[in-house]
Image 1 (cartoon, rainbow, N blue to C red):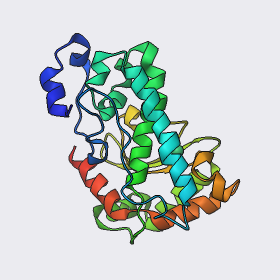
Image 2 (image 1 turned 30 degrees about the vertical axis):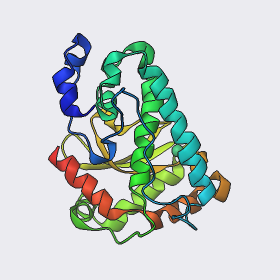
Image 3 (image 1 turned 180 degrees about the vertical axis):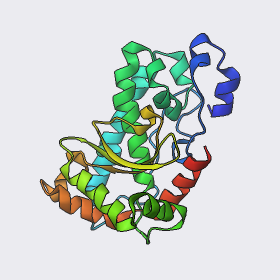
Image 4 (image 1 turned 135 degrees about the vertical axis):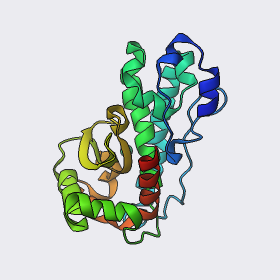
Amino acid sequence: MNRRNFLIHGSTALAGLFIASSPLRVYAAQHDHQGSQKLPSLPYAYDALEPHIDKRTMEIHHGKHHQGYVNKLNAAIARSHDLQHMTLEDMLRNIEKVPKHLRQTVINSGGGHANHTLFWNIMTPNSSEPTGKVAEAIQSTFSSFDAGSEMFDKIAKTHFGSGWVWLVVDENKKLQIYATSNQDSPLMKGHTPILGLDVWEHAYYLKYQNRRADYIDAWGKVINWEQVNTNYLAAMKA
Ligand code: MN
């Protein structure tokens, strides 16, 4: 069900409390007519990001880890008519209104689903130079593109434990870089993530073992800056 249908059919008391946001394209078409969330297909082959991100890691990461988040989320939302009729983005943006007994599952598994959906989307085997309005905004926000990039890398390399590092558009339409732990999504703070790096060990351990810094450097070579720019423009318009 899409956002429009949610608004039309969202007539129950709970649904009325939710703010329907303008979904980022990357989160669109994520659930079917029965209200189940679906694992999105990768926009490239499992081995496409070699040698930077290896095929086996991609197979397990997408087919097992991400699928696991989708399955657990579906098991939880099967118990709530309202959640079944919401988009993933709206669930996370309105997390304090998700029934308490389901909330942590939506944070963990819904967050995991959203975070990975964005992650696949902002990588490509045909990476090019940072481009467009987002490159200009990074430059003006962090004094230079390199300074922004260094800040991101430093946070990624020093974040303790499992989590993500983000480039987000905040509630004032300003860029911010920060980390979150576990699968916590910036959507829960009212921010729109436009670029994210998974620093869970499952994202890199097979190839890089404890060398997270090498993984981060390699990941920098497969960023889809055109998509990041598209995400930026959508977040600025929302
Ligand atoms: Mn992951």
